[in-house]
Amino acid sequence: MNEDYGSLRLRMVERQIRARGVKDERVLEAMRKVPRHVFVPPDLADEAYEDHPLSIGKGQTISQPYMVALMTEALELKGDEKVLEVGTGSGYQTAILAELAREVYSIERIPQLAQEAERKLEEYTNVHIKVGNGTLGWPEEAPFDAIIVTAGAPKVPGPLKAQLADGGRLVIPVGSEFHQVLYRIRRRRDTFSEEALTSCVFVPLIGEEGW
Ligand code: SAM
Image 1 (cartoon, protein in one colour):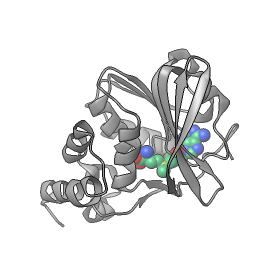
Image 2 (tube, helix red, strand yellow):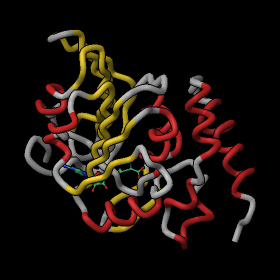
Image 3 (cartoon, helix red, strand yellow):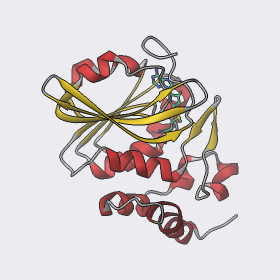
């Protein structure tokens, strides 16, 4: 059992994240702070800081650290935002968002994953988790300044665009079930502009408006 997770975390940020061009100091600081090994299954804790996704059970994954950093940076969080996350998974990305924004609303379709994440995120009073189909968003809490989807979608779900605030950013992988492009969509009034950020591979976004 490797006890020195703090050093592994610093090295992860320098070699995997900063070296690949992530510059937002607040994002780098959050990634240095949040104990990723707590969010992976206990038998994989020693792999938590490695440069790849890991299985979290139920056929799902915790994303590669670099992908978490890149997607978070793309949301352009300054600290006062209301954020929606679709796909809580392990809760690791949720914790990073909770360090960087005012309120985080996160939806997970698999009840056991949502419960486990909720337990691990207990100390964050700004995190709200619910079980459901995130492609429909969280209409009662809309609009959101930033929305992040951590599963691959066949198209951008209409309800998520509709729940984006004026000036808001939506970061989402869109493509086939096996390969996607990560997009940032920016809303200005009723105009949505798209930027392709990178290619990626995510587990599928399931349900109405998804696969
Ligand atoms: N952000 C997560 C983390 O840090 O561990 C990674 C999540 S994993 C790549 C994607 C998650 O999206 C899975 O837990 C999956 O069950 C969930 N998911 C897929 N379709 C969904 C949907 N329609 N609504 C909510 N969650 C969904």
